[in-house]
Image (tube, rainbow, N blue to C red; front, top):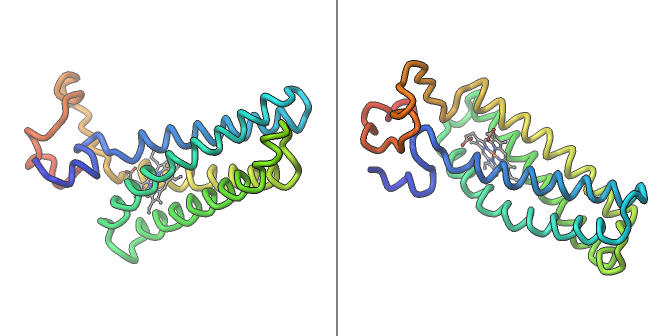
Length: 174
Ligand code: HEM
C-alpha cells in the first residue's frame, strides 16, 4: 500500500477523473442556464442557477486542479506527454480564471435575476477553454495512455476490485 494512493488514487482508479466529471458537468450547467437566460427562454431562475453553478464549479475546481497537479508532477519534463499535459493545465487554469471573473462581475446580475453581457461572454469563453482542456486531458489519457492499465483479459471481478494487493504487478502501469 503506497501513501501516494491518498492523493493519486489506486492503480486503475485515479482520483483526478471523477473530480473532472463533476467540474465539467457543473460548468456545463452554468453555461446552459446563462444561454437560457440570455435567450429569454427562462427568466430570473436561470440567472440565479447560472451563478450558483459557477460557484459550485469554482469550489470543486480546487480538488480537481490539485489532483491533476500531483499527476502532472510525475510526468517526465519536456516529453510530448508533458507538453500536452502542460497545455491541458494552462487551458484549465485559464478557463477557471474566466469563470471566476464571470462570477465576480455577474454577482449583481445574479441578485437581479439577469445574466448581463460581460459575464455571459466570460462564461462562453470559459466554456470554450474548458472544452479545449477536456480535449487535451483526453489526449493525455486516451492517446498517451497515462494511468491506463489496459488489462484486456482481466477477470471482471478482479478488474473491479481496488488493486493494492497487486501493486507490485501493476506498479509500472498505474
Ligand atoms: C478545472 C480543472 C480541470 C479539469 C476539468 C480537468 C479535466 C481533465 C480531464 C477531462 C482529463 C481526462 C481524464 C478523463 O477523461 O476523465 C484530465 C486528465 C488529466 N489532467 Fe486534468 N483537469 C483539470 C485541471 C488539471 C490541472 C490543473 C492539471 C495539472 C496541473 C491537470 C493534469 C491532468 C493530468 C496529468 C491528466 C491525466 C492523468 C489523469 O487523468 O489522472 N488537470 N483532466
